[in-house]
Length: 603
Image (cartoon, rainbow, N blue to C red; front, side, top):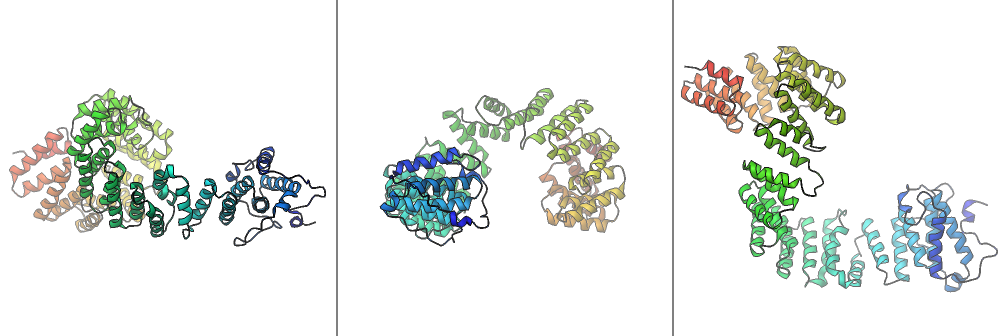
């Protein structure tokens, strides 16, 4: 007999005793557990793989309705067949024949109309990715148990997942009406149900319709405001959130939502609305915290610091307050306050202390407390601060005369973090270069390039080292290769153009290269410096000075200062040239570039 012929056998001696609904439900669970295996036990079906029906398995078209339910007499006389069919469906599921099991359970659910079997049938239909079947079974469940909230939730979930928003309003309304005690919370949860929906306008219309009977609840207006904001209906969103605040004037969430909506068009308006709310509700910590963060976002640091300090007074152990206070203190060079708050942060229950250790390392380094700085940096774990902490600790160690130890730190970090190997190898090369071992630095990067010949960072850094060693052909080859790989690399164009300008050769080509770099990065101070320098080489002193002064204003770098002073000196403005050098030497008294410039322009 073919497989399809024995899908639902009729044993000769089928039992005649009526099986109660509770017994059928228990039987489902018992069979699932007794035959437990991968993706078999009740509650575990959804963890298996999607099954492709084997040849010969019954397959019902997606739009074909389930079988008509049997009458009560049929149900009473099918207990033996029910047991057999349950067993068959569970065995099929265990063997990975998910579609076969799902269809068998769906038919059994219609025959028995038992809530337990329906629930199990829905579970397996979900595992089979048959949303159409899930929806139809959920409707059957509601027919059997009209007051079942779980059945309504399954139906609504199925309709949402299949993007069938039309006609969903009545189902959502029934769910809301069925649980009046949880109505405010359920209204707030509406938008989360549609988080993956792409038709935001349809979602807005649906939520508006469902919330219409609850116009006296702030949560209803809040839900509509969220949907309107997601749909781009800015004015509607603002109107709804204002109504929510009229009904609940001290509601932090609504005030924060209003600010978020306003921020889409005007961050200043968002800050203003939060400030007014906080003035009316001075004990609102969430709104004040949002206000402080918004002020930071607009770089209004002193105002932000005042807000955070007020929060700190009432909530001194809140990491979301302690850390920003520390960072803002650093921003204002108040290292004493920053250190105090960062050390306090280390005593709190925070998941990651790396940022605190990193900034404590910076504070110690600025104070020339090298041992303490390195100790803090080495406590920084994986994450955004790990690489800079490793680079800083190695630089400090090398500066103290322990170059081999510094190199070993970087090598160990590269071994433990292969994804950062390139950056760490470049850092090694930088330490060797600063120790006047430029040839060794280039050899190190050459070995890395042999393994990764087109790695952009290696090409760039090794080209700069090659120029220092006067290996101009190597420099040119690598920078031109980098330009071929990354045509939008402003740094590559700039490096090649500046190398020509600095050696006072091929000035026309140098200018073209630097102009290209400036198009790609018009505000980069080093590219502005290069443009000033090539113009100086070409005799355009006024044009050179404009670019150099703009670059120096953005970045008080020793080399930019030296170039600016040289152009001023050539223009006969020697007093100004000396002032530029004096200011630069105050900030970097050990710079060799500035020392050479001072000797060159000495009276």
